[in-house]
Amino acid sequence: MNAEQTIAWRVRPAGPTARVALADPARLTTDEPSTARRTRHVGLLRKGSWVLPILSFLALWEFVSQTGVVEKSLLTPPTQVAPTVIEVFTDGEAFTDLRTSLGRAALGFGIASTGGIVVGLAIGWISWLRRFVSPIAELFRQLPPLALLPVFVLLFGLGIKSQVAMVAWAVVWPVLLSTVSGAASIDPRLIKAARSLGSSGVNLFTRVAFPGAIPSIMTGLRLGASYALLVLVSAEMIGANSGIGYRIMETSNTFRIPQMYAYIVILAVLGVALNYTLLWLNRRLFPWMSQ
Image (cartoon, rainbow, N blue to C red; front, side):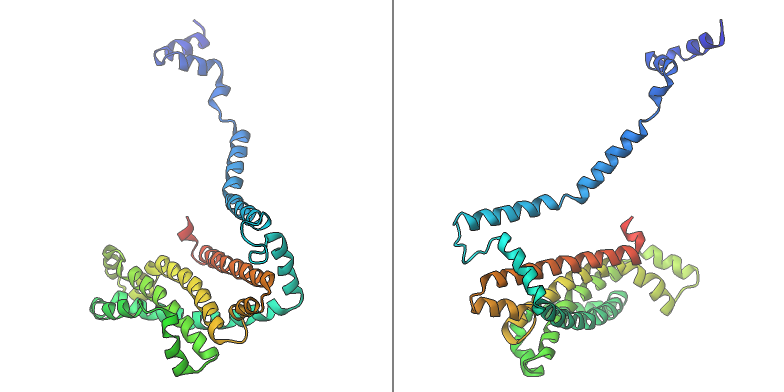
């Protein structure tokens, strides 16, 4: 009996599959190029999965407007809105309004997020403070910012101060409560392990409380960013003479409907861009969260 027959005899109890594998070892290998191509195609499909819904929505919008289901003068089709978007940017009008709105939103967002994170970490870390403050926070976060517009106008006047105050009010609650939730839900075993290694006081707070609350903080910041934009636009519609919200209301009152829809589209794109910017910063600053 030669060596090949000996090998075949020894693997015979494993069944016919083993004999085939010995006869054709290439069948045991994976078709790596084909697998890589399939993986690449799946990745491209996942990355482009957002394109089809948007195209479907635009097609439906175009159909409804062009066929007269809704009067074309009231619902401008996308094929007319797109050139109008280019037009308002070419005129420089959109750049001025964007700069004004983003400045107000950034100021209110910065004030509220900084205060919300600092105070939220303290409330979430100190249990007795959390029990005392939570009912008050739950009460005030139910107040809509627009309902407080008269209060902000009385306190800060009709201008940028009241608008920034409204943005800060809208942003602080999701950031604060998300931070409190993140700091309060840290695994007690991590705290015990850190203390057993000699951490205490400020060191324990910065090394355990803050890193442990980061996922919740980022969620609160993303929610706060969307709230900041929504509230600011609403405030600009009521009491401003510049900004995206003011421009939407002004074009509506003067019946410049294509320009109105152009600014609405700009606002939607701006909101999506802010959200994905925060996601990108999250992956860059805290890469372990995206694993």
